[in-house]
Amino acid sequence: MVCARCGGQAFYTRRYSGEVLCGTCFQSSIVEKTRRTISRYGMLRHGEKVGVAVSGGKDSLSLLHVLNTLAQSKQYRLVVLTVDEGVQGYREESIEHSAALTKELGLELVSVSYKELYGFDLDQALAWKDQREISSCSMCGVFRRRAIDEAAARAGVEVIATAHNLDDCVQTFMMNLLHGDVDRLGWALPQAEEGDQLLRRVKPFMEIYEEEIALYAHLSGLPFQSVSCPYMHEGLRGEMRDFLNELEANHPGMKNTLLRSSLSVSSSLSQQAPKKRSTCSLCGAMSSSPVCGVCRMRQLVEQHTKYAPE
Ligand code: SF4
Ligand code: ZN
Image (cartoon, rainbow, N blue to C red; front, side, top):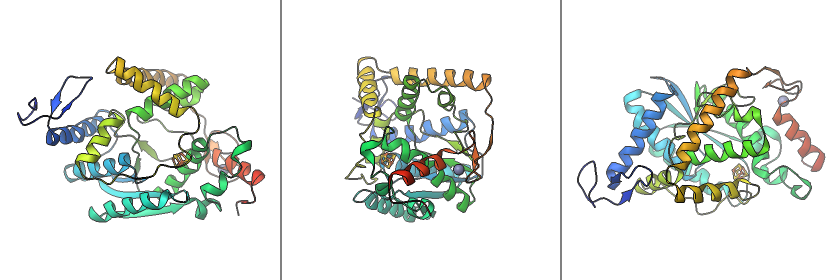
């Protein structure tokens, strides 16, 4: 097989498009696809100061790598934002990977931790697992979004780029559909304001399959994390991932079709119901309800553990 772009030795076939590529042309195609997504949805502006949320996993390290390539022509000023959730035996390695790539690229790093912001780390906050109805990732996600906002504020960035890929986006859409969560269905738009956040958030990888990002990371020599978060497999998301992977295997391109559907649904919903905004009565953060999600979660943790927020 020869590469459709350069005629070299091909090694990868995109099942959804039939395109056959060599390693170098595959890597360029990911950079080019990301550039097109950013431009199609007006995600980033020339010269803008962009906070890249980096967890140290393959997706976020790849995003940093790709944006750093694009930054040269678009003059984005990148700052790496990291959050230490406090998961023993897991976070240490990913923090090292994030710091190493940040240093290699000569970028600034701004780091915050749950312990510093909330008074407890994630291991402590999740200690009452047996009595909970909410999944670990749902809880962690609420704290994590606020923590990224805090890091972004300290870094003085204008926009936050996260590494959500096409698989993440369609899984989230399907989960929100299953739960009948109409508000969140409206958050799928590339420029949507999510929940209580103020800063613009963009997902430059939202049109790229997770498996292609993993391949990009491998070809670019980015480090792979050897351990997964111990809380990752709880809840429906894992089952939804398997279901969508099987659907894609039987019908190549189906995840792409689902992404388009999610954007149409989101667009209609956001036109119907403009979001009302006020401030949280406890912490003063922007919130669509009288008490924001972070304060509600902190109260739950406080009620169920000895790690009361200070
Ligand atoms: Fe938090 Fe879930 Fe990510 Fe673990 S996998 S760090 S619990 S969001
Ligand atoms: Zn609050």
